[in-house]
Every structure is written in structure tokens, then in C-alpha cells.
Image (cartoon, rainbow, N blue to C red; front, top):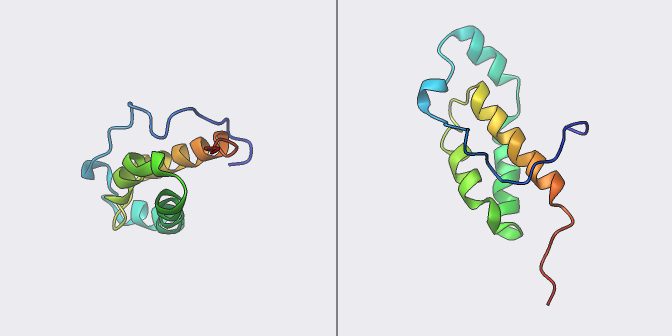
Length: 94
């Protein structure tokens, strides 16, 4: 992710995530089991709850597919991580 370009929206409108994108074959399930989808979503949930309420919609969307994520779901999680990378220095000052 270090080489990825930051983005300006938490989740792009062209991400149409659904259960139809979940793995259908054992090979796809094996490939997705090697990724740390649940860990990444858990970290995003932590950030959302404690410091980043702007992530609520995006994290809620990717959270729906925790049990059986597909490649498009993983791409959406990576998108949210790219958004965090680009907005890490933003904040509220009182």
C-alpha cells in the first residue's frame, strides 16, 4: 500500500458490492483466506469509532462481507486504506 496513490473519498461510487461477488469455488476461497480482510476491517472499525466518523458508511459497507469476502470487497477495503493515507494529517482544531 505504500506505493498506492491516495484518494479523496472514503469509498468511490463505482464500488457496487454484493454477495454475488463472494468466492464461489474452493480455489477462490483459499486465495481470499490468505488475505487479512477481517483484520483490516477491524482496524478500520476501530479508527471509525474512536477518531474517524467520516468512515462510517464505507466501513459499514465492507463490514457486511466479513464472513465471505471476495476480490471486489478486498479492493474496497484497500480503497478506504488509501483514503486514510491521504487524509491522515486532516483534523479538527478547537
